[in-house]
Length: 430
Image (cartoon, rainbow, N blue to C red; front, side):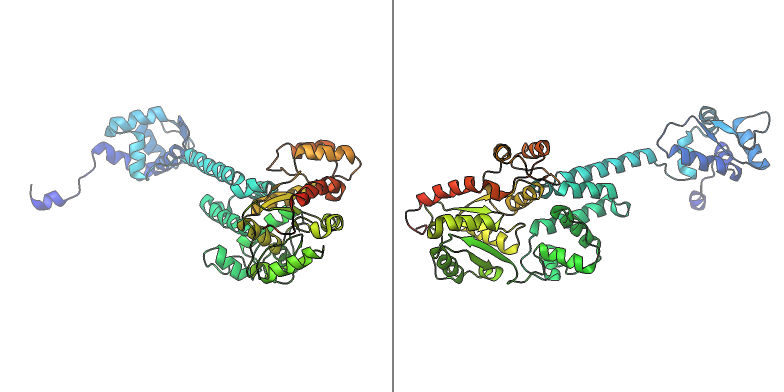
């Protein structure tokens, strides 16, 4: 054999030439589609076939007459014919003539598994677990489906949204500055109208139990409520009985008000730039935190200059409140939080416990039942979500259907504070 002969393409075997007849192309195309379904195939239906295609099919199957224009072809009979002609299987021939076979059923199962894993991951994410109100948002994301049909793209978007939610409340930064800090320099990712911005705002609306914002003004207001684009003077937090040592402005303002038996209204600027601020190391100072200003007012009225350290979030804590609590914890304080026993109060408590090292203070299911026994005629609690610190609390609130606002248990709280006040032998923590 010459080198030229060696380079010549090998001619197909006579039987395989029969299989490659153009008239049989509809057969192989149909088989390719059916075999790629991933489901069992016992026969295929062809057609409509023209006369030449019917003749080619009759020759292949060894029929003594032409098949119908839309015939059913048993796969077993076809396998026999293909094996006899080529010694190969139908799958081999179809793969060679049309292309690799797929597995659409397997691909659908894989995609379903990927989607199920995605939603399980979202529902179990630490940010969602810490703030169970976000489980409704997670369920809404699942109902909306994957973005652009892509699980990977959806996971990336949700990961970014969870990063943003974990960083809220913001630090009084403009939205682009906040986005750049949280999202690795992507300044405009949270601009109005972006998918991520819409996703985060839906989460905030769910968290705050408000309707999703419809206008640009409403969206700006919701961001501001979450501490983004807030200014250092508008965000304030009330404190009483706080006497840190040091010559910093925050320490001086808080101490002067505490010695006068008055509340101090600290701005975010005070908290961000406190100057020298010292808490004693022993014993560990305990700072109690309440939701409502009226409870702080009652405590100051009761204890005056002897009031133990008390912080008030005034409902949903803003950036000033969260940063003050974090700063107190960083300086060694133990934080104890109490709020309303209603749906929003539980969500606020979960938010505070997630964003700071605070621990619940008389916020258990047993505390709720005792409060209801004394105040059985309260209003409805509103939308109830799980309390991560006590899984029985939501069930008990749903069963009793009664909200107990913080003011109604103020005497119980004041007794705890009286004990804390008695332990303080002089008006500082030194």
